[in-house]
Structure formats: structure tokens, C-alpha cells
Image (tube, rainbow, N blue to C red; front, side, top):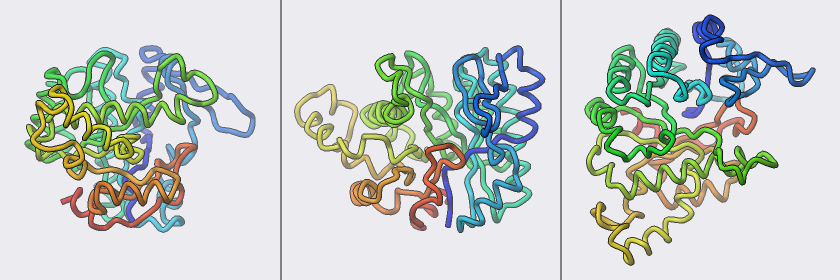
Length: 311
């Protein structure tokens, strides 16, 4: 079984954070007696630093115990560092990518990996992507855009041009939604995360970007958010409004099977609907391990999708 949605923090990245903790305002905070320290970056992004995030032996042992034979490892979204100057984001990308490349190259039968890029500077992001794939990474994980900038904006064209040339996997993974209405009852995570994916995925689909860059392998986290469930509404808008249809060559529903989606949905009926809607060859098994809301062990085998994404 494959697991296409996992996260890890190599020791070199932890060392970089400690060496640069003042620059990025990194703190290790003990919140609960029976839990590991929480790593908080820039008073904004925080998470429990579980051993499985930082101990490669435990990571592999846990995957094996769950029946996972091959894992695609990604950096964690909290360390994208998009809030910082380009030089910081580029530096941590370099450290992260080199470390994950070394680990995955040492055990290619068990591991593949994605890198991270300084998305705030798309020209530099394109360079870092090229370097990452030359080191053996399969592509990169990125956020769903930047503040006031969507991934379909012309600003990001240099990055997508290079990703298209390299036929890279671009795994789009949201950060917590910062809508002030959601700052209660864990809603930034419960519905904010899939909402951010929904906004990004809908914008990418309607922008026609996938027609411009057909070789980019775009993978959406958490089953594509709410997009598959609301695709009928997009089709109706396509029939109704030129603003929806002007950049598309077909109905929105006909574009769904040109993206990939993971199985992190926690509900079999939802997963069955996703597979029926986008096709079995576009849904890859994933877990979001080792975050609290991981689907563990991962659901589904989807060998067709695995081959189509990795080829």
C-alpha cells in the first residue's frame, strides 16, 4: 500500500530552526504534561512536535505496522515560511529539500519525497523546484496561494512553466483558514482547511491553467475539499455566465479527472462519491500522518492512480 500524504521534519531542518529561531520567532512550548512540546512559528503556526515528525525510524516502523510499503513524504505546511523574506524561505527550502532527498534516496523502495519552494518569489521557486527534482524529489508541496494572490495569477507563471516542463507533482496543501468567523470550536481546521482547498481548486479549474500547463500533476489534499461535491453548481454557472465559461474548453466537471486527489476524508461514503466523480485513477491513498486528524491507517489502494501520478 502507498501513502501519498505524510509529513516529516528532518534533523537538519530542526537544527536550522534552532539556529534561526530569532529570525523566524520559533518557540518550543510545553502546553500539556502528557504531550510533546508544541513548535510555534512567528506566533502564528503551531503544532505538537510528535516523535513521528522527527524520528525517521519511528516513522518507518509506524508505516510498516500499518501495512504501508511506500510513503511519499512532504514538508509540513507550518514551515512553508511564506510570511518571511525570500532569503529565509529559500534557505529553509534548500535545507529541507536536501535532507528529504538524502533520506528518500537512501531507501527508494520505501520512500519518495516532495520538496518545498519560496513561493513568494516564483522565479526563485522555479529554480528551487528544478534543483529539488535533480536531487531525486518528485515535485513539491505548496500552499493554496499567498495573501491577495491566487495560484492562477500571472505572478506565479514562472513556477508553473517550470513545473510543466519537469512534469512535476505539485501537491497543494492548505494552511489553517484565517477567516475571523471560524476562530472557535476548531473550525479553522475542521472546515477552514478544506475550504482553502476548495477556493484554490475552483480558481485553478476555472482559470484554464490546466490547459496552459497540461503536464503539471496537481494533487489536492483532503479529497479536493468541497469541489467535487459542488461540481454541479459550477457546471450550471458554466451554462449561465460567460465569466465562468470564457477560459474553459469544456464543462468544469470534465476537468475534474485532470487533477489528483488524496483519500483523507474519514468517511467511506465521501470517498466512494469522490472515486465515482473523478475516477479511480485520480484518487491516491493518503493519511496526513502524523497530524492529529490523520486517517490511520490510510484508506484505499488505488494502484491506477499511483502509477499515473508517479510515471
